[in-house]
Length: 464
Picture 1 (cartoon, rainbow, N blue to C red):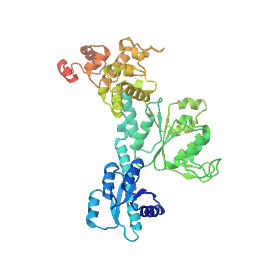
Picture 2 (picture 1 turned 135 degrees about the vertical axis):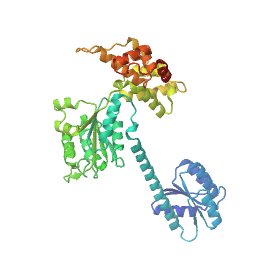
Picture 3 (picture 1 turned 60 degrees about the horizontal axis):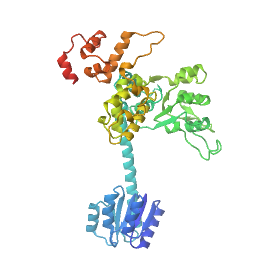
Picture 4 (picture 1 turned 45 degrees about the vertical axis):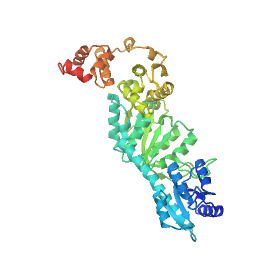
């Protein structure tokens, strides 16, 4: 522990600090209460050991000020004038303990600090466990979205989370693969175990092998000690291999061995090590195409692709955008009312090639630019682009070479409008440029509403 010793007899303060230092504590000492308060303002300490009887400010004053300004710092009082009444008063005012400066009291003081240190460690562990429990409770509930594509991906994730199967998450950059991987881990029976992430595209091959599998001392220049790899760190937990398509061919062979046999060897070693780690991999690349181009091992793809989950691009889940905007604004300390309707519509029209990550960055930038005002179109980074200038009425899809079904397109647009407005038919009709009566008629034609279902007045009241 980092301890500050306070005594107006500086020799006593120094001797006590030396005794605590010999016991393994990081100790310092000051002469008197005023010097102690100045030191506490400049530096953080885990504990203060202060004499009680000093020129003002005395030990009780130091205690009161420490409890008020630095509540995480424990305070222990010491005095040559033992008094139960004073001790009780000090404990009532927040002191952790009280020692009498009679004989060899350093041993008693060291025992008190060891007890406090164990208590701090226990508190820290409880915080970690509470965080784990909270993560477990949330799990896949952290994923925002009600669109059909999001619900389908979530349903697959829920089913596989209950197993130890290897998962391959695919999708464009920014679609939330990291979020899904974490959610699967914290919704699984391994939630209390370690969560280890490795970006396979962030390191050169030589360093990546050591990062994944560890190395023995002397395995290469600079390997001055043995180092455990990330697979060892993930034992009894989950290892997330992000950008798995960037894994070099030689390491693909070693990864295949880990998946098949649960064993590997450190770089420079010959002793097989066994690990119990669930593997979740993610990629934004076409692994099938890489297999055909001999850039990725087919047998490794088979092993990774046990349970594939394709995450939809943001443009394929437009109905989720209002909820995502609300979620992101709330996370940044704002509210849904912080954005104008026009800005929200511009966001809904933007194609977002960077997906959810781009949306979050755009909103963060807009909040900074808007300051205390509401986010308007001019605060959006794409406000001068074609997406901001276009309107629903001027948008026309490109007809593919093989043609399309106008009926299917119309039905899909109605479904998207209803998803985006969360079933509010009046708003959906406005999005589509239709009257509500016309929308009802077309919904009936596409099997989205039974003929005569509801009535105009009742539906209008419900929509409003």
